[in-house]
Image 1 (cartoon, rainbow, N blue to C red):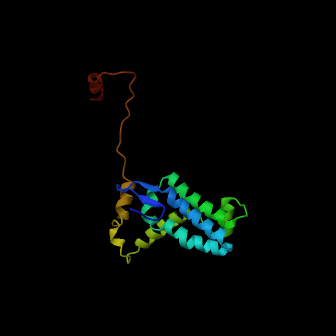
Image 2 (cartoon, rainbow, N blue to C red):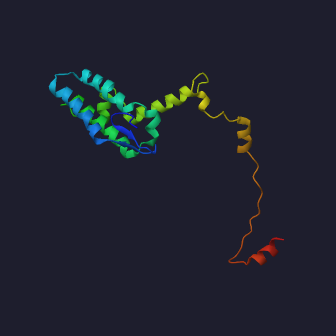
Image 3 (cartoon, rainbow, N blue to C red):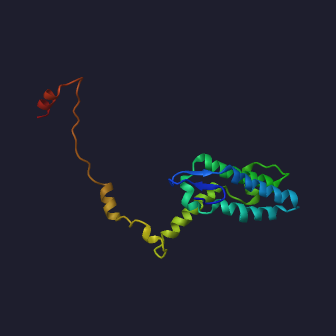
Length: 171
């Protein structure tokens, strides 16, 4: 199943992979727009946000938690390359360039989207709210947290003691 032009899910629904050909397609597309037309930074940024980033983030609430660090780094490397192309010939560190362009890292955006999605379905009027488990009874939870501990007696044994002697000492 294909979630975007760069993220593909395997049949076992637990393996995700980024296809190198698709990720390089994005970089090539952005480079071509920059090279063959005299385009401003604002136009390139708008193109990146609307055409490339939107496809990369499509459905991220579903597949975000299955990404490995390597796959997340590949996605971030794609944005890093896009930022370099957009700001060419200016060379800035990635974090500084993100601040200059008023962008956020893709990982931060995925995390924010997850929180926003969960907060949305937490509302009782949301059509997906019925899929959530019922809320816990707070009175029950507080009673469990403060349950009395079972008293126990500590028996100190010096070395190996056969079980028959141990049973006699305890009685």
